Length: 210
Ligand code: B1M
Image 1 (cartoon, helix red, strand yellow):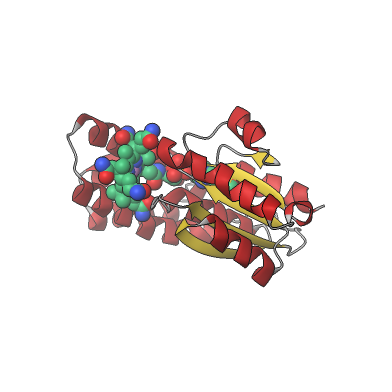
Image 2 (cartoon, protein in one colour; image 1 turned 45 degrees about the vertical axis):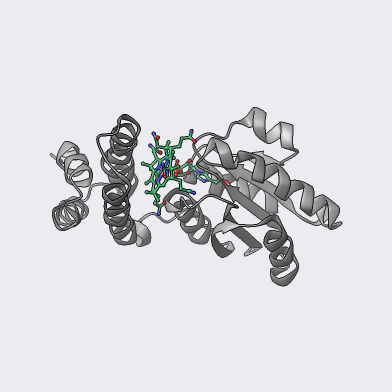
């Protein structure tokens, strides 16, 4: 039986080598990639978050844990495929201005790519002006905004407002997500959709392109 606790422990202790071995072993044993992601990696990251909050882990260690998780997400990437069938519509995704968190945003991008969408991952700390420029440059049909900090949630509203001001609101659907984001917040800022995780974000993007 797969020992997900060993994975969370390896992640929390920033032991990238051990974590990679455990993930490879689980894959070889036929454990579904989504289960490895949720029960091993995301569960481990939640513990990292608690330790960070309590002052038991500091930024350099959290970064090491994040890098270890990122390497394992790369292993799981080809196995996390969706059922395809999307239109190939152009999607831009980025973490909003002031926010450097990208693991969840990259997972969302990956799931959307697997679902057949053409995803342009802009990165982190993306200003409202850059989102507007990229909508035009990539002829985007969906704009995805990610935020992990309560302090950067207002940048989501600023981005929606900038899209309205640029006269592009009717051309794009706007989706928002990230740990502190809620459906109520999405409604409040005038987004078209909120998804709590990468899987549902991918499904929602597909439904918005129909
Ligand atoms: Co940061 N951090 N961090 N951090 N960090 C959190 C978010 C925090 C909750 C930790 C804590 O205190 N418990 C806290 C935020 C508190 C708050 O605002 N309420 C916090 C803080 C305070 C900070 C700093 C301010 C710390 C400091 O400097 N004093 C600082 C801010 C830097 C900045 O952004 N300007 C900071 C820095 C960092 C690191 C750089 C060290 C690192 C990020 C590395 C990286 O991303 N490359 C980091 C990390 C790793 C975390 C935690 C531990 C993990 C985040 C993560 O990757 N989770 C996090 C605690 C936690 O979340 N438990 C924490 C795993 C990931 C798969 O989940 O990102 O939620 P998540 O994504 C999910 C969903 O949210 C959703 O799907 C994803 C997959 O299912 N989703 C979407 C995400 N985007 C979506 C978009 C969608 C739809 C769904 O549609 C468009």
